[in-house]
Length: 162
Image (tube, rainbow, N blue to C red; front, side):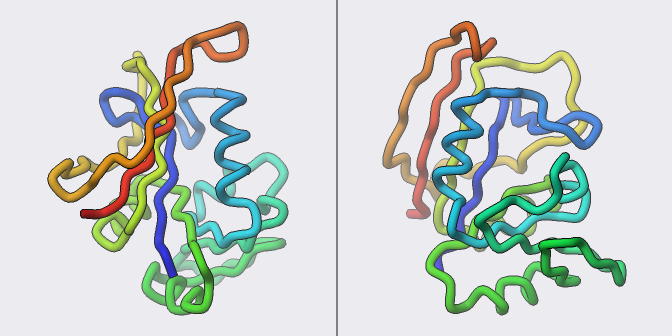
């Protein structure tokens, strides 16, 4: 199994505000959907609860929560290690947030799919952990200019662990 992290991140590492994404980039949403469809996505409870329509379609939704709780269309595990054990037979598993789940998964991840937004938001309360660039090799980068649907320039960056 390949463990991958996917996240949209500002230049200062910001990823969220008030349990919501900071940026709404239609092309990033398409990119996210294209990469994760058909795979397992692992997230924290707050991330799952932030989805307006519940479980993401055409994906195995795994939620991490220490509470004895259930969510329609999702499996719940108390720890990341238990969730990953349930994914042992999968080809690729994506960690999709939030910050504490990213923090736990970063040392284990083999790939990073970053959407880097060329902006520093005025407000943010959630940040991605620091990335040690000595441990990661950039394999692909696609630049996108700001346009009528995207308020800021951004780039898709794919890293693999060295």
